[in-house]
Image (cartoon, rainbow, N blue to C red; front, side):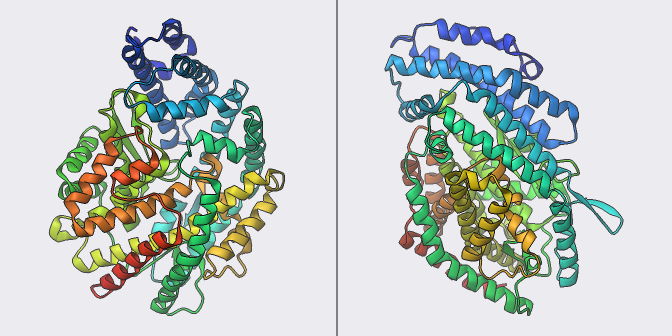
Length: 569
């Protein structure tokens, strides 16, 4: 097949008619043992152009949610171009599957294609487009939430940085201001939610799935575990982690000399805080330079990867008004390079986010050698191992004596907060995961937002009982409003909990032999999507686990390390 004459920029403003001939050529071509490699290469190259176009349009929309032109371009692509691409890709998948040919390294991608073929429905193409647009609307609602703080308009992310203060009254004032602003959008998010539930039920029905959970299980290629495994993991967290997390919160109360732990005593209603605040950097340039030095210490290859991102302007780190929420790593497929998007405001949490997203970025670099784009996509359960492990593996190099951010005392404090946040995250993850299982098994109940409020409150009491929400019941109940994944990426959250358990195992290996652990980690990243989740974990030196014993080992290591670090801090 000839190289498509369109550049990425041209396709961003193009139509389906501009790319249709290239799909038609692939569909007309016969697939034989003699041409399978070249045919797959042509399809792969075409998908790279499509995926990069999608990524750039989505990124532009997230970078400025107030940019009408960027939003229109993204939505036009979703409505007028992408559904045709999805339908044509499905025909190509079916053509390849009918051939019965299985090129080396394509076993797992072909398994995934087969699952996708089972649930594919042309009737779902407009529904999936509508779902993405509703997700964009959610981003817009969150991205435009600002408050007036001492005469200055601040995003809620900027406000959290300003109010991260030892002055408890100031923290409460800021927290209540942010909560009040979020509740102003309660009806808008509720209305959006009802539309999403109805839409997703329609998608499952069109796909012939018994419910939306069954649909997503195949869509997310979950072949290595079941919904029952998720329930086992939730129960293990309740038995093993909740008591340990409660002890962390008790220590936090003692340290702050308070009787009741209120949400403004935590970061994002979750992680503990320590004062005085650690300011890791003063400028974005310093933030980038220091992170680069750390990665060079961890492994020269990682340092080179990060420097390429810096040199090629593949980083958008600073928070600003109108910028979409959260942080993520996307990729530009034709170049095989990543792009990191986040909302840095000068807090130590920024360091953790950049380390995390850099793990995703290194995954993009490592898998780029694989010949077919179809081989690049690993399951999210391992993608998040790549990122979460990279939060922990640099721990030896974050101090100033290694060119890092902190003096020895603050480095210990940073690591304590990092490990505490990991420990208390598991219960929160269990809330999000259990909530979504309930939602999609009881959609008639869940389409009524007040029922979701009640379920979220019930799960919060079960998994995070130490936090006192007296008088703040509405804010507590609408915690599901504030979790982007619930609205935009349904069922995508247990991956963080599983990957954290895998990452702790890799980190434990690094405490014994750092070089060996990093090399195994990189070996697993280089496999891309050519191995099962179970095998990817094994290659990285870990195991995919849901049981109480494996979780207990990880919790014991975290608690032991925190105790050792507290002697320094």
